[in-house]
Image (cartoon, rainbow, N blue to C red; front, top):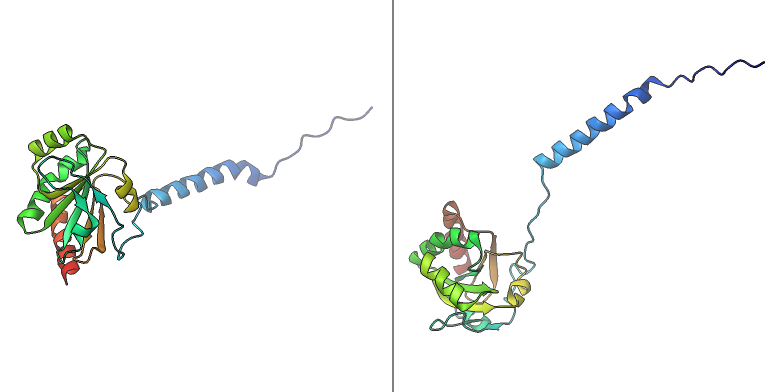
Length: 185
């Protein structure tokens, strides 16, 4: 008769393997929380001319927007916005402040209806000298914009000099003014 086989002894390090793997997982998660990946899409058009476009007026009584309007020697802030965009309402006072400081602010209204746009501007103010309607988001995509709101500083030759992703907050007005001054030099 044969004797039953003795139970196999496992190596002590195998007992620690799950703990080591869990600790490694926690280390990777902690590292990524402290050093998040860039999630914003930056335009490949920085320091390049605006693409050709001609947008119809988004509102009656206010001119539309075309590339030729942006290359007349005057620095501008081109703001991509929408009436349905909550952060766009948040940045409205900052756009008004930029206009009060002498910056020409032009807008591109994305997938908006004239009546909604008019109500939005009546509620939050209209800092725009021109507003083009982009119902297909074609100019938004051509600019490399990743969403609304988004702003671009355009120099007097129609070249994109700076891109600001997200709403302009009060503490960022000075930065935008600096970028406008740099674009005018």
